[in-house]
Structure formats: C-alpha cells, structure tokens
Length: 412
Image (cartoon, rainbow, N blue to C red; front, side, top):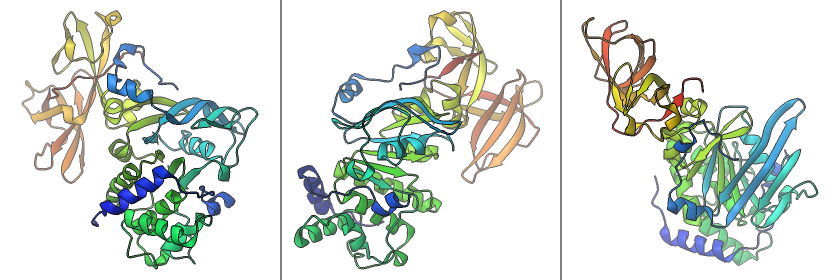
C-alpha cells in the first residue's frame, strides 16, 4: 500500500470540477480495436428507500437508460432495460455470464447501437430512434479488462495520450496530478512491462480520467489480478473515484466486489434488471429467489403462518421479524430465507437431532456444512474452522439470526 497524497487529490478534484479541455475521452485504441425493479408478489417488502435516498434520487442524473433492448441474431442480450445513475455515484452491474451486463456497458459507451430505447448522458441524448452519437464524442471513459496500455509509451505518456489540446505545461501538471492521485508519482518514466498488474491498472484508470469524462465505465477491471491484489485495488479504485467525484459504472460477476465498492448494485438476469438498490438492501432483502441465491448461499425454511407466529422446522419466528410480511399470506405457507451465518448446528443424539450433515466444505477460516433437515428442507451453516462436525452425523440446527428475515411465497 502507498501513502495517499491528499494535496494532489484536492488539486485534481478542483481541476475536475473546473474542467479540463480534453476531447477524446474514450480509449482510442480500444475503440479502433474494437427498470424498473423486478419484484415478488410481496411488494411491501421493497421499502428500501429512506427519505434521504428519495432526496438523492432527485439529484441531477448523470446517465439515463430508458427501455433499451439489444439482440444479436436470435439472442436477446438486453430487453427493455431502464435505469438511472446519479451524479458522483458508483453503480455496479452484477450478474452471471451472458446476463447482458457487458452489452449494457457497451451500449452506454456507444460501442454497440441498441435496437430500441433512449440513452441520455446528463441533459444530452446520445441514442434514440433518430440519434446515435459516436463513442469518441460521448465524453465517456472506459477501463477494459486488459487495460490496453500502449507498450511503447511510458506511464506518463499513456496518461497524456488524450490531452493533446492542452499546452505543454498544463498537460504536464495534469499528468503529474493524476499519477500522484493513483499513487504512481515516481513511476512516470516506467513502461507498462516494468509495472505490476495493479500499477498498470492505476495507469489505465488515470488515462481514462485524464480528459475529464462525463462518466467512467469499468468492464471487469479486476479480473486479471490475483485475489489479494484484487481486494486492494477495488478499495483503491473506489477511493480514487470518490476523491475525484467521477460518476462510474462497473461491471462484474463477483458478488463480494459489487457489494463492497458500490453505492448501488443492479443485479441482472436474462437481459433485464432483477433488482436495483443499496448493497445492504439487495443482499438482506432480495425481491426474487434468483437475487437471493446469486448474492450468496441461500437456504429456505418452509414456514406456516399462524397468527403472530411463523412456525418453521427449527424455530418459531415472531411475525414482526419477517420483513414486509403481506397480510394476504395470513394462514399460508411461506419460505423464509436464511443464510449460513443465520444458523448453527451442534452435535446431538438421534432423539434430539432435527437434521443430518450431508456435505462439508473447508474454506480455511470457516467451514460450510450442508444439513438435510427431518422436515425435508436443506440448509447450510457456516462455522469457525475449529468446530468440527462429522459427515452423516446427527445435529440439531437452531436459528441464531437477530435481524429481519426475507421471505417468498411457496409457489414464487
């Protein structure tokens, strides 16, 4: 880790707000080379927005995507997708391979043209039925997976690539501030092959920020880094973006990455947005089973609603702890979402047990156990690595969660 130079950051942020006159924001080499929330029936659960969030939503939007669709042959990559990104926000498009997240990014960048829909950057329409603004005219910066640095240029020359409209002194100051901002003040004369993967990523980020893009797009920016460096760099990139005040959209299939760096997360599935919200809200209060399962280990306890209680195979849960419970499901069966850290399994005699260990995965600091309950439900528990339970051994599972629990209708 390096010592962060706050003076450089302050100068850069001030310059960014004041405006530098770069013109070709989208990476030229890469260019040449190359809704709404879906909700479950229990809509009352989706009360994530606080007064503060509603006020935030009224701020100026940096990007608006309205009803955008894109097909490649017979394959529908994106379907009727709508979202907005707030000024200064870091939004992450999260989903499995083939869900449409990279296509969405390329549509915003202008590297693909939608079949229908409208895209606006600030107050400017860049794509609709009659308009298509070229990528190099959109004021959009892009950081690709491979970084796309020019191997024959130094770090400083790479950063300066899109700043030919500045005079020499202004360009040098701009490059110096950016290299200091990304922690590479002493690496300006180094060539890409002399830099580590993390350092190359910082140069690519600095180069994309250099011409003051209206919005920055990051396409799986950490996928080429090893695990430890990936964690370090995603924290650094978030810091740099927040210090500079840049609006950014990131694309990833890594749930931990999305949850840890984003202001909001849009979970995508089959070309549409399944759920959009703050990381905590999307994880703790998923509005579909897909979101629940994609964002981490998800188990479901079948519960019967009986007055003020929900009876499950391992515990009676106070109805007030079932998040946003809908009155129309009184006296019905529901599925209660539980995650591995919500449960605990302990060895038990056959007569006291309510389940049996069927699977064990050692994860280093922790161990994941899968338990087949006598009720027929299968759940997973996460234990400290020092706690050992044998396969096929009887256990008693208890609910240890002290927070609200999400739920789904049995047939949803």
